[in-house]
Every structure is written in structure tokens, then in C-alpha cells.
Image (tube, rainbow, N blue to C red; front, side, top):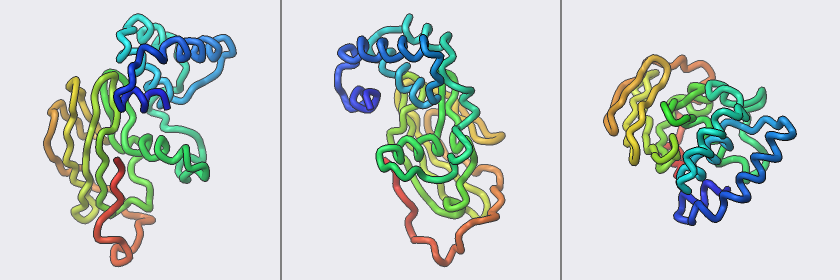
Length: 191
């Protein structure tokens, strides 16, 4: 939540003491914190100019590897409404300060064949990503734009260092896809 407030323009520095206290307590307890929460904390610390704290946070290894999206039930949308935005964001992109991985767990079966777009997703320490997926049979086409610090993007075997562009990704097995005739003309838009 704090990272979202900072992303919307609130001063990051006012949140540093509370953030550091929470991280310190978690470290003393040996608590694992989800990758998204660690990256959000890093973005707040970076925005506050606390670069040493960002490096310390990285060394603490709070989170599992970014290649692990989450737990066993991560394919099911959470029932708690407040957890849905971060659940959706984790399915769209995960990142650290080096690379942003789009659709890190591939496409949920209910998203196969559905066009969608997302805007202003936080990636890295000081960047945002907007992208859209349009389907060409079993091949997703991606259009993207990175704002802020340049950051490489990846999906499956595809990678790019361009700030914007479009590409046709490898085929995705359509097993479990919704019947195309029952899909809405426009997919969901996540902002």
C-alpha cells in the first residue's frame, strides 16, 4: 500500500522509518516476505534516496526467487478483494532491478485467447510498464512501452531491451481456453 501511495506522488521519505521498522522486525523473526512486497519496499527506499537500504534489503533475502510467482493456490483469484490487484499484477509481470518478466507463469487458462492491456505496472526500482496482448490464433502478440529507467523485458524465450515495440510471441497451448465464441469482444483492462 505504501508503494502505491509513493507511486501516486506521496513523499517516500515519510514512510522510511515505518518501512525500516517493519523490515527489521521481519528479519529478526526470520519471516519470509513475498517477492512483490520486497520489490515494493525497494521502490519506496529507492524513491527516498535510500540506496544503501536497497542494497541491504537485497542482501537480506526475505523473498523466494522471483521465478517463483507464489504458492500452490496462486492460480485461483483470491476471495479477499484487497488482494486481487497484487494477484493480477503478479500474473502480468514480476521484476527485480535487472529484468522484468512478462506473464511469468504463462497465461491462466481463462485468459487464453482474450485480448487485454495493463498500464503503469511498476517494474524495477524506478520504471513502469504498459503492455497489451492481442491473440493471433495460439500466438500472443505483445505491444509494450517502458517508462523511466530502461529495463530488459522477457517472456519464455523472447527478450528485448527496447523501450517500446511489438512482437509475436511463441505459440501457447490453448488447452483449457474458453470457447472463443463466448469471449467478450474486448478483454479486461487492468490499470
